[in-house]
Amino acid sequence: MVFERDEKPLLIPLPPVRFELADLRKAKAGPNYHVQVDRNFYSVPARLIGQSLDVRLTSATVEVFDGLERVASHPRFTGVFGRYSTLPAHMPEQHRSRLVDWTPERFEQWASTIGPHTVAAIRAILASRKIVEQSYRSCLGVMSLARSPAASPASRTPAVGRWRPPPPRRTR
Image: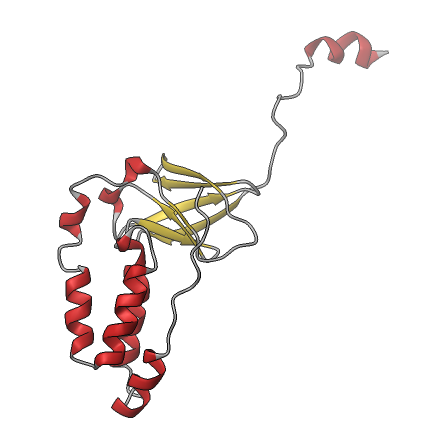
């Protein structure tokens, strides 16, 4: 009786979109203007390269925030790894000036100081992506392997020479 008289008239309808729990994380924008979340990569504006950003994950969406400003929103990849989601608005022409030290030629020049198998591996890595900047992280990984104390000339060349790029992936 009290409910019907006092409280029911004050009720409002439920929101049309159901509440969804979100996971909050931090991620750093890499030199290829992508943040890595669950082994996939999502683009952010190039002006945020090197900055630590907040990431909000739901079951279907990845949202990236710089402070309180949402700077990117992508559909979330599930069940796959190593995929890139790149928004054309995040690829301004001037972003290449930020990557002036990282070019395919520089990676190949560096690889030539190691050996011919390393050059072949770097070329295969660079050719494995439609957007060449997306392969830079893999090239940096090869560079870090060559700098490791365990990397001797005998252990580097044959293994790196047998590397094959991953098969092409369908893009949406």
